[in-house]
Image (tube, rainbow, N blue to C red; front, side, top):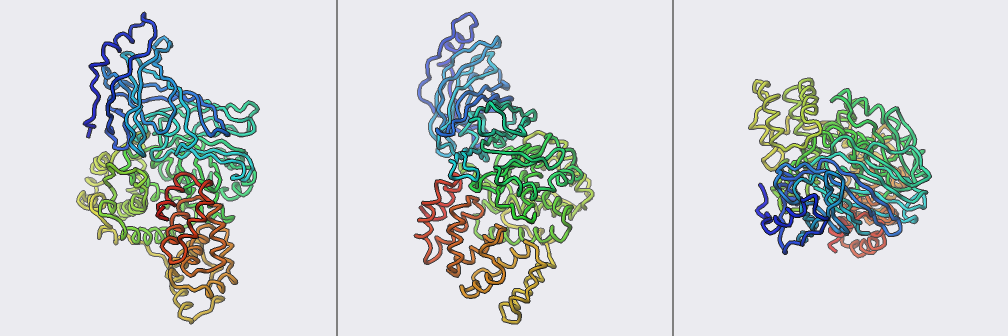
Length: 634
């Protein structure tokens, strides 16, 4: 639905006509009276992209690591979808706008009127620019705030190298905190960038042109020839080195991480080849990884050509590479074919989790695939119990809500099982052919669930002779909760059944710790074992387990996280000591949020958790701080 808030332009017409006269001297237009701009077609953006749409972005920015700002200008190339429409509305949040000029066809600058609309909290403020007739380029000079929500600035004490570091996190709507643009996944554009940083640091972006070694000038140039949505804009600056893995793949990291990272991600080129064999050409040139400091709030971010990765998956044995498979899979599902709005996040994430599972199966076999699926199934069912009705379905109403609330388990795991179910109904060979054609058909487009359904009806439902029906599909998409149909594909794992048997025998004192066949267990079996011990351990038993298995100093963060959760329940002192160090070192939301929540819900830990959080907060990304504060009730 189009916004009911549209600005009347009559008061501007005479001024615009004067401004468009090429013989008239450049002059600033008179600012317009106070007015409101509501959200546009996308409820999380002010952009009126059905009237004026960005098609190319050219950034020229200086990074000041001490001031914690990016400053310079951006030139926006525009498609005037509605030629007579005479304003451009951009998304912005906490930006210092210093000057705005239209660029005439002959290259001369024309100062134009601009103003901010009202503040809309997490959405920021609309930047409203008068757009004279005939203008298809606008230059905006600006600087970011040191507190820009989409950028994290770390000083040398917070990094492995001892040098400052900066990285972006633009998803879902934080690109507007470091670039004024149309910050909606419905709009895709190409971009170029020139970034200058201190000469002892390297700049990388999710783009073509990343250098393989630091240069002497501190200036780096980039280009993204494929159109992307704003949430995939990505930049990082730090003491980085690069090592090649394969012809199209490699790793950037701080020097202290690079050797371990290369060893951990040695199968990256093979993963890329598996992806192409499944669903067609990789269309982004290179696929490299950037290992970020431990404060990165997520496991990974799928920025095209350069996925950002947490160091918490570097376990030394490749056991947590499902996350890398996930970010790589986004090169097709999400980056190539994108959800046009966050209500349809399942189009990005459900497809990607399914694709991730197929990569892991190709690498490690069906048993590992089944273990991962069972963990996801159990976690999804548990999370569904605590959700409102409107959040228990794939297509969710997010109007007037922070799009950050889109990122729960439902679009990821229920979306994946929906696709598993389709595969079950029509057969893997048929479904693979459908997906390959789907990625080709919608390549470099942003689509809605309705677009998907039209394509599904024509290419899979109608030819299926009743094996797949629209009514059944709608149960997955629009009805709260897991449909009864889902139990057709409930994942089973004999390996987990074996773990359950050993756990219950041990808890019943029918087996000793030394009898447990842990040497044969995968990391996923360990996770399943520890999840099943929730609320069933005391401190003495945990001490016995630590003496035999060394869990409190575990290097695999997935296992360590669960051990720390059990430590909170049992008030296991060595575990609490390790928990304090963990919370001070790691900012990954997947771990910090539930740990703080468990402490807040305990009868002993909330005050202690708040004290630890106050010491840790300056090293956390704003997203991690926000989530921890909510978990702690502060």
